[in-house]
Image (cartoon, rainbow, N blue to C red; front, side, top):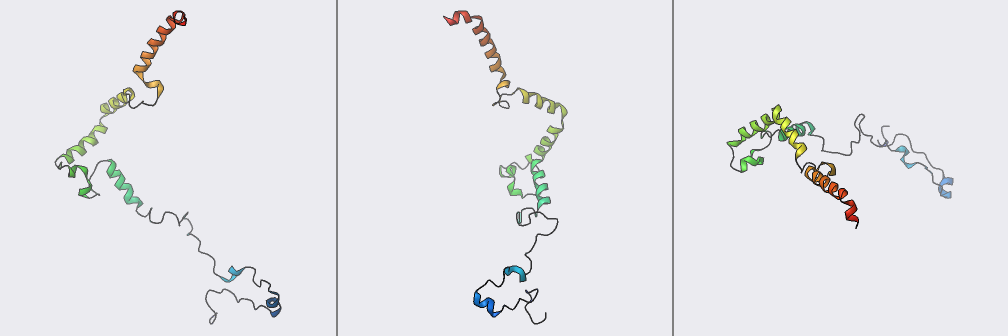
Length: 152
């Protein structure tokens, strides 16, 4: 062990002169004497993929939470939109109002109610355009009433 190189695990075989003359491949598996390839650590799946991406996962999670709740600590003051618009006095009030607006149950109910009514919420959906539905119903009834007359 002492005098032979460290990457060899066992002594490589001494190939005979007959094998050399016949040009036979003396070693069917050349990787046999190399150390095994590195394996990802147990319990971590796909180590090679996201390299630095998940390193700051906890910090990123609280940054996104604070961004959603409209707080401007944990991010630089220059990032804040209200700071740029010379609105510094407004920040506390706006945060309070945004937070309180969603806690108010009456406001929440109203928001849901006119979420159902407004046309932009239902824009792609055919069954919910209410004024069109009413108009079409009237028009359709008129057409059916005059169907005999409309044929000629």
